[in-house]
Length: 406
Image (cartoon, rainbow, N blue to C red; front, side, top):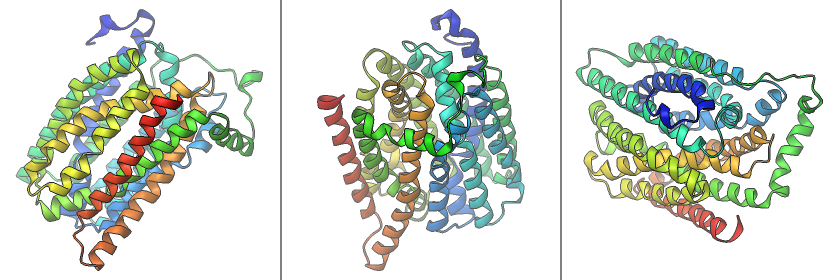
């Protein structure tokens, strides 16, 4: 595997398996997710409300993260990653029948909700198989391979959809099967056996687990401040998430090939940026990485506000490429930075729960805001400025945390 010599010997076996799973995941991801919003709006003429529901779906799933985390306490975590991802991706086979906007939206929403089961377990697996001092860089190397196959997959699918000789109802099922294969290969990563009868692995009642997890916000004030900053920033970001595909299709008249080209520009920069962010997170600080990235992401709605044609979205593609890796590695490793030993799944579950609240409410509030702007005769693009203001406020909280609290 690429970069294998840079991986500590004790982590190489996991790295090989994780890398192969990541390469297949890239084929799955690149063939589907750059085009979901476009297909919903352009091909199926889905409403803003349906697009908002699809946007909120993974976050609705995240709201159940506390229950998933409790269910997997004292058990091996990797099966929860494997089977939730495999089942979710297998459901893309049903895209053969998703010929109406409602069917399409429901199927995409259900798939994304099921996939969220993996989140708390994945954090614990990464904590176990990769050393703390190398985790950021190892994850970055894996994401480089994932990005490369995402690039190829997106380009091929964009060309096929442009020519019109292959429909998404055929592409998505094939991609879903590749995603299932990725999940099964990830399941071969070796983790330690867990004795559920050991006193340290005894599960508590669901109510006690929920109380203990939510108590983290009171006991760990630094994490509470971090969670607040993430909540405010994320709410602003998700407020206009349903508006992006609507604006692209209705106002900028984007095509499938243009989506593929912009997405691949993002992917190339994303792939390169991982080398920087992986090292930055390990050597400097994941918290500093978060600050830098949220400030950059705050510029995206401004770019949409100013855009007059598709190619004016090139700055957004570049910003997304720079920040995708930084946000992922920054947030993920920030959670592990705050988490006490043995509490990684609990912290990740709390993070996912809060993510779920803002992600469920944000897109729906955004849809209401867009409708209200239209009712008052105000251009819907002014919603982008509202979102940017909230995002900058969240970034200010992040900056204050890094400078004065953590």
